[in-house]
Amino acid sequence: MRFRLTPRETSFYDMFSASADNIVTGSKLLMELLGADSASRVEIAERMRAAEHAGDDATHAIFHQLNSSFITPFDREDIYKLASSLDDIMDFMEEAVDLVVLYQVQELPKGVEQQIEVLARAAELTAEAMPGLRTMANLTEYWIEINRLENQADQVHRKLLAQLFNGKYDAMEVLKLKQIVDVLEEAADAFEHVANTVETIAVKES
Image 1 (cartoon, one colour):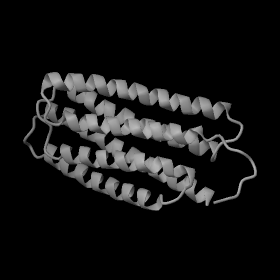
Image 2 (cartoon, one colour):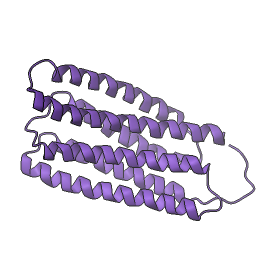
Image 3 (cartoon, rainbow, N blue to C red):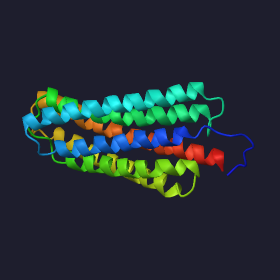
């Protein structure tokens, strides 16, 4: 790691950790959605919406700190990109839950559970990795595993699309379910964007 002669604003580390912890909360709500009845899904959606608002607040706090800090722990554009990518994950997860409720989906297709399990694992890894930004140590396994999980998510997504277009579902149901599984895939992509940004930061700081 480069030797620095100037002090750095360290509150960013705690803020990134808080943002990632909130994503873990969101992933747990996604897990709750599986098998929940209609009334429970509405309540889960309300809790997810609150978590998404908390994520927005965390992101705005990072941006405010960035704008008011003369010295930052790493490049400003990387701080902005990391905060935005973390926020994207929460937005996609909240959108998926909201769509399930709005479309009054009675049964999610087989395979969605695998999508959500991948997101839950990625959320755990991301939360575990954020404190490592302080030292940039032992982060390589994190972004490698996130990349593997994203590849797994791609495979699950493709299988889900094949399932949706096999003639079992009517056209309107296909449109609804495809939008949900596509948004969950976007969440998996967003986790990879976070990992790629962390890797970029680590390379710059090495």
